[in-house]
Image (cartoon, rainbow, N blue to C red; front, side):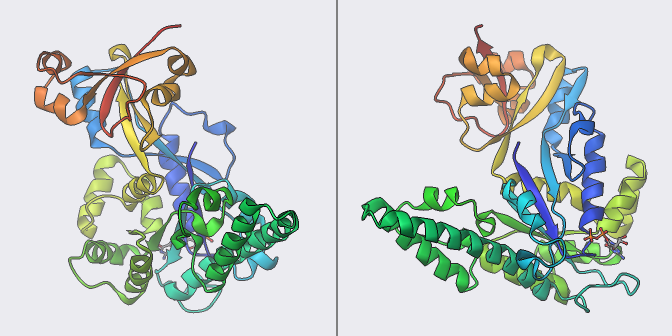
Amino acid sequence: MLSCGLVGLPNAGKSTLFNALTRAGAAVAAYPFTTIDPNVGIAPVPDPRLERIAAIVKPERVVPATVQFVDVAGLVRGSSKGEGLGNQFLGHLRDTHAVVMVIRCFVDPDIAHIYGEVDPQRDIEILSLELMLADMATLERRIERTQTAAKSGEKRLLAELDLLRRLQAYLADGQPARTFAGEGDTSDFVGSLNLLSAKPALYVANVSEEELGAADAALAGRCAASPPVAAIQCIAAAEGAEVIAVSAKLESELNELSDDDAAAYLRELGVEEPGLARLVRASYRLLDLITFFTTTGGKEVRAWPVRRGTKAPQAAGEVHSDMERGFIRAEAVNYDDLMAAGSFAEARDRGLVRLEGREYAVQDGDIIHFRFGV
Ligand code: GDP
């Protein structure tokens, strides 16, 4: 399963956020949480389309798509050189597919910041630097190995060595691998290095409850941001990364309330929806996931995450391996077409239900019935 690693300096609010995400996930009954590592949590992806499909299908159960989050422990200044928990964070982060950086913006004299004042720019620099230093170590080892092997004079190895050195210089210059553009199509090779700073990233500004409404408005471009949020915005804009404002503390409090009370509380704060919902959706986009739906004989309406570009047989494989092996065809109707028609029967009459073959790339919002033989 694709996952996002949550990183942050101590007291940034990362664990509070992780716990809020995980508790939201624990409410999705279809998953065996007890078998999952304590630092791995699953969060449901809010998707209003599910309820509207369910209103047509009237199933017994509705199951949302989920995103997996990994709580990456122990990143401090000097981690990559063995400070704090040392480079333990590496192991956790290597296996994730994207990075969510939790940055402290809230001021609270009772909760110390290990580096003094609240300063998002410094914190982001520390986090980014540790990831890049870890990558530098990876590159050094790889360069040594390639250098030895390239003594044979093999062209491919010499080209790789050249690319590795250019990447090393790029990182040494303080640039993350994700913005490195080698000449020609080198992305597969760079991807195979599994560098931390190559993973897509987004920023979470952890603001106080009182500031959340204003931070949301600022991030939506409706007003100027407070200095800490503006600092994150500025760095993110340069990288083309997204920024989400949350109040980790508020999110954990919302979990204790009924849906109605939580909605009333958010209205009072001038916030449209919980930051968690926005964070989960942004993480979903970061992982380049899209959603297709199944209706399993009218019993269950379920949302499935797949990487954009996934072909129909592989999408079927997400549901069941037999469906991939015995794939015959997919009957697909897109959500918008179904809503316009009002029912599956009407969609069929209007010719909106398509028959798709093995080469069909599943589209976001497709409601699919897989035909397969065993
Ligand atoms: P971590 O070290 O990043 O995992 O930080 P924690 O999630 O353990 O949070 C550290 C402390 O900050 C805890 O006491 C939290 O209750 C508190 N905290 C987290 N988020 C907020 C927030 O938005 N506002 C305030 N005032 N405190 C927060």
